[in-house]
Image: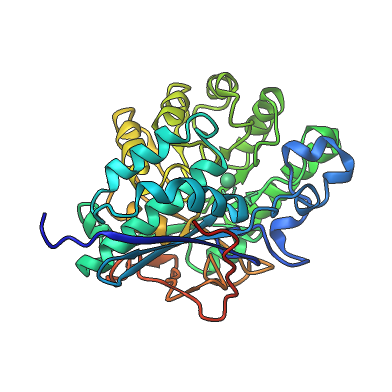
Length: 392
Ligand SMILES: C[C@H](O)[C@H](O)CC(=O)C(=O)O
Ligand SMILES: [Mg+2]
């Protein structure tokens, strides 16, 4: 392809305070208010997820500059360690290549990091590079990323909201509300009762038809999750999310068998690559939730989504703002999207990656027409202090 720009330089920066590392919030935020986690068995780490380091990484910004001067960028969760991986390892597979060489670049990034990678922060870094490449290609072609992905299959997205206030989410026009589970097995019968009481109270507030879900953030075991699912089904819980640790594929298969058949078993935000999701899909879970900034980027999400489709399984990506919207709008097996309420009390709609991006669209009345601005359609805010810890 003559005339296709090549990649001139890859740069990686870190940024603190919200953004893609959405757990990196100030005090008194619903997202850090006694949420059940795998660390809840240790009383000293029960009240706050920041206490055990949920926000240690911070946001990674990847910028890719093409030979024609166009710059694409992305944000994900990976911070300084991600910046090191991008600058010192991954950049070599991009610089000098054509901006269209996305598939080969992904393959080389993945295979060259297998000896220390496969998932986790390495896949977050690979995802960041992949998203920045899609942003760059969209800007060079002057089309939104969803057009690079085959075009939209629906006119607009509809959203459920994740946060502490599903009752407010209903007033704001969302189709459902997903609450964090507050108490895990270590908090015994009292915690179990409180979990059910909160759900019952919320059901009373939102009425029978509004979706209510519980996000368990890897905090339960099969016994507790099964019991919770049965008790919660009396209050119309639509799904039980990420009940178990991501490595317990066998537990997910067991939970699928033992939970009420009407309740969806969902998970996947901490899973990565087509191989990880293959294993997850084989457990029989009903809905998978890859995070496009963590699972391998758009290039890998396309494969994960096709695999899920062949299993008859829905794909509703975890959070990830514009990176998710451009994908969801192009897939028939992604019928709705998640909106993470980043307002401290979850009572108002604010941009998910606030305060990092300019032009980040938000749902109005629970719906959004994905803007046609080239690339992912956002810019990094000029007010953001970015730091480049490494060069190459
Ligand atoms: C609310 C959850 O604990 C977590 O912070 C976000 C999440 O898992 C989700 O949006 O899904
Ligand atoms: Mg979740």
